[in-house]
Length: 214
Image (cartoon, helix red, strand yellow):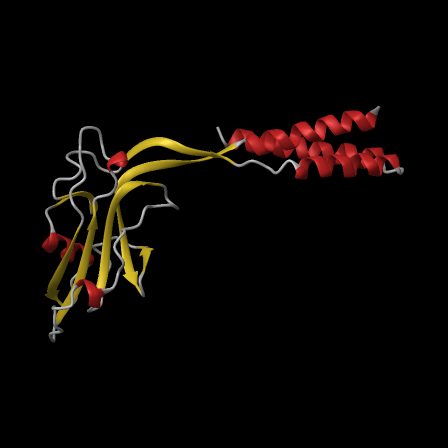
């Protein structure tokens, strides 16, 4: 009898845990990236604090993202290919500035993304990525945060959008195998109190996760 109850409780616990959504706040904003070796890396400092080396590539992409997942510019960051005619000059920093206005389906209501472009900038050595962007485009900022580039978007600035929620499904084999193993072990004389304790822990974890996801 207890074996059957255990089967049901474990199954319910696994199903409840697997159905909990993992959500994160999402925002629509201009993401800032640095490019090297043909790949983009999301900048760990603001554009005003980032001092690019000569021959660097800065990238800006407008879109919807989270603190851990931001859409990258779709232009390959290769300075030699992007700015082949920009010769090196002593005391001057050359930067390729990639501006990607994002996808239409992520645009604010009634707005249309501008055509993407690349600007080849020459500025005094020691200049920041914010300086390079200001040379490349008309920038609307708020407290150092880039809100708009060339008038896009018109007014919003890092607007929060509905959360992105993904259901992380547990493979059916996992709970089934766990249920069968626990039940079989009980058949062979497993300690009933040990399984009861395990069940309490499982239920407790599920309840805790459920509360933190709200």
